[in-house]
Length: 167
Ligand SMILES: C[S@@+](CC[C@H](N)C(=O)[O-])C[C@H]1O[C@@H](n2cnc3c(N)ncnc32)[C@H](O)[C@@H]1O
Image (cartoon, rainbow, N blue to C red):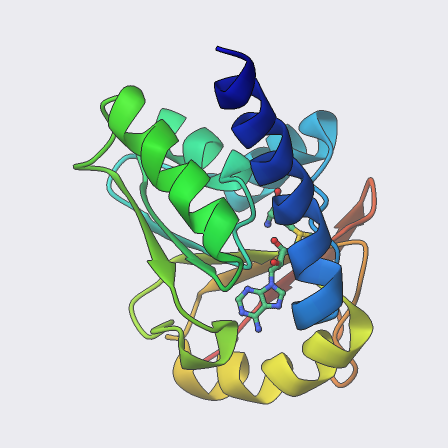
């Protein structure tokens, strides 16, 4: 029992240290209030396809799924991918939520209705070209805390910046 607890503690510590050390972005879940606000701003409806770029422990994925969306996460911290997969299994959400051990730069954003992220400025700069080139028209893009460089948000509430790709 003691060794199991020790494994759990080590797993959690390594999960937290991995992202800032190897990916340059710490793992910080979007605050609960703002996470709910993101869902509200995105007006998520059943059947919509929602992507979280850098999905962490899956908070945004589970909230989106609660509103009936098909949610997909991309995450390169293997510990967080394992954790999210375990939660998906335990909560019986395998038909609704997927998480890939894959870089945000290789994410397939082409059919997403909503793209969410909580990343750092260097990623925002690199991602904006990919997202605005590859995402479909009318997609809603929401970023917590950090803004894109060359696009103006259509809404800005509680530290959440929302963008729309116009036709
Ligand atoms: C600030 S956390 C946000 C977590 C989650 N989106 C949320 O809001 O609760 C950023 C996440 O992005 C992940 N990340 C950073 N760079 C990445 C990359 N190149 N590809 C995939 N995930 C990445 C980190 O491991 C971390 O879990």
